[in-house]
Image (cartoon, rainbow, N blue to C red):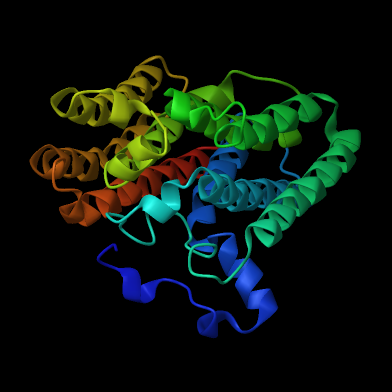
Length: 316
């Protein structure tokens, strides 16, 4: 069992059903989607788009519902394929799932029903919002839900086929694009410029989280990149993704598509660099990767915060 197992959920710790279902969404990790929404909204404001508070709040709520639904369904499908039950090297709460099914807090049927309910509510809300801002939002939302579902759902199981990183990258780019679209009511390349570095850093979080899960995932047939690549090559992907994130940012600052002050959001590269060194040192002993995971989380969130504040500061 993972070294943080005492903090895992239990039947007694979640006697209140509402608290139980809320916690099953892994709410602490929904901040990743909140940050992507804020980037999209700030990017639209920087472009001179008139800010609409009501639709912005609805956008954030619907995006969080989708992310919550995807989290819950990921637990469901990982319970079906057995990967979470096999995972003895997990670093809870970052890897190995929410443990709600494995620890008997929720059944697999309850988890599946809740996950699909969250997605259904989000989709209905998305249809209503698209009637206000344009049908393009339907395309963005449909692709987002499909990617989130197909990431772990049979028969596609894209993460198990080595495509999980692309799913996360596309999914979080989609959140930024969607938040921008609701404000702009049109498609633009600007949210891709704004959101790509953040999406790459979120992808790095998924990537490093797969090292503690590697053995269990391999036994369960989830052949993602960390399973497929030799260890010495697998550790190189992490600094590559971080370097691409900040190279993208630097290029578009140089091209004057982002304000010069946006270069401040390169500072979290220091967190990524430290995490890359720890990953190189401890890739074969993932019990020691908790600090690297936390540094990866710090890199992505602090980058999003810096860039959001700069874009709002420099908006017309």
